[in-house]
Length: 249
Ligand SMILES: [Zn+2]
Ligand SMILES: [Zn+2]
Image (cartoon, rainbow, N blue to C red; front, side, top):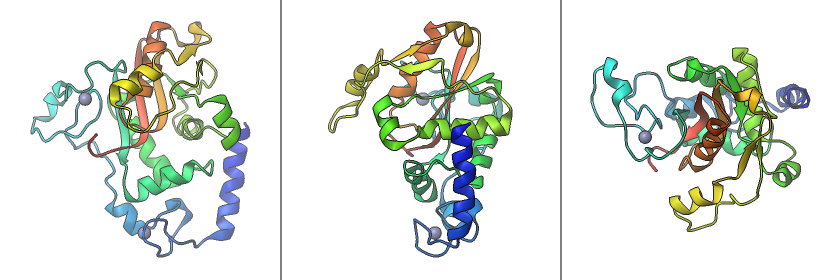
């Protein structure tokens, strides 16, 4: 697979240029397992464990105190209209995680710290019910310009780590209408991504519990639109996993 070969190649290139300065604080990064940030910056970055109380559906941090067995009942209700079953992120879009997300727009590589965190979040309920991994497709032109789809890079790593099948062909973009315009509110963004996707092979997703992969969860509009398309094509459930999400949005 081209993406995998590129990642391996990038790995060996990286080992030649280490140590490199931390993209957050400038001190040297101790190991290439940390990617673009140093251990101290990773330590200060909020990575989710299974201990936080969050909206069970969208993963938004909640200040509510609830017993562990009642955590599935917690909802923020801001996400009520979104189509996915549940969304989770590796951590908060800040410091080392923000630097890693930005780096992923330029280099098709995910560091080991992040791969391990992806695997950890995926192995927790409810994402551990997933049967198939699908990356959010990028616009064809943008993918051509960038040379790769960063969601696919994440999906490849996760598929390798979990042995879940990777499906990069069933879900496709149909339009270029979802460019986020400055000043557009959440509803405006929702409208522009509606009907932006289609499922090419409904039999591939029918009855599946899809794990949809993207780099960042912001308003949830894009993944919700993908989820709606997948559910209409017969998917049983659609979970979402991203590298990062804002603390509040
Ligand atoms: Zn640092
Ligand atoms: Zn929510």
